[in-house]
Image 1 (spheres, rainbow, N blue to C red):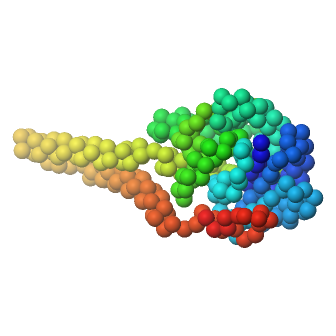
Image 2: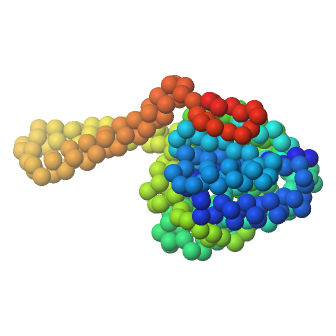
Image 3: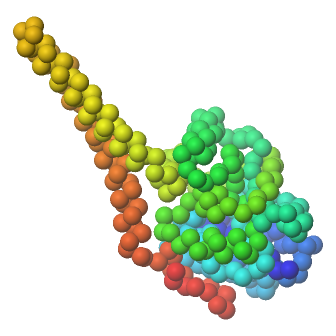
Amino acid sequence: MRISIIVPCYNEQAVLKLFYVEIVKVLEKITNNYELLFVDDGSQDSTLSIIKTLCINNSHIKYIAFSRNFGKEVAMYAGFCNVDADYVAVMDADMQDPPSLLPEMIQILESGKYDSVATRRKNREGEPPIRSWCARKFYQLINKISDADIVDGARDFRLMKREMVSAIVSMGEYNRFSKGIFGWIGYKTYWLSYKNVERAGGKTKWNFWKLFKYAIDGIINFSEVPLSIASWSGIGMTFIAFIMMLVIIIKRVCFGDPVAGWASTMCVILFIGAIQLFSIGIMGQYIAKSYNETKHRPHYIVSESNKETVKKIN
């Protein structure tokens, strides 16, 4: 049995050595046939230098360095494309994904009942209340409007069999939302819960605005409901406008009532205009995503790597 651990990294110099010590300690108790693949996502600090130093002392350590920052989703995809182990795991380097869970995850997979073991947080201790509330509402919403099964509190930390990894790689879409992809492809998944763990060092790269944009991307990538809302809003506004027109005509013809009310007219115009802009914005998001897909640009470009065979442009 061979295990590959994919570790996306972006400016993680504060925690990288600590993570390395902990993960190697766990892996060497499990097997000697493992690969620790660091994917440097265009870090601006000493992350890549630290990884290269670690490689000198341990032949199990491999790395892929991007030519620029392509994002965590792409870093995970690059990792999936460049491993061939029986079991593949994805972990963050900030120690929020406890390496101590790996033995239990491997034991569950080896039982033969599941194709992957995914992790989720039991609680959101240490997280701002508004952020926790928005996260819960997002999971509720996306599970109602999409085919992807996304569990509340789900982490990217998971261990998968080779077949599931191959299915993920086959979904070569440019606009990636891994939590949705994991849920969409199916496979039997065991959910392992653990208490929330704070970062061991450094600063999080995810502020509220980035998480909000990530949530919007997830909804657009895995649901057509926003388009349906735009369509039905247009139909609804057309019906309302027709009724209002009939009311105005009847009042004028039957009762001689002059059509007055400049303020109310402006309110109606602004309201309808807002609905139109909202609908155009929704359609624009889908068109932009489709445009990005049709350009067929590579997901990532590798500037350097110590792997013998690596897909440098994919």
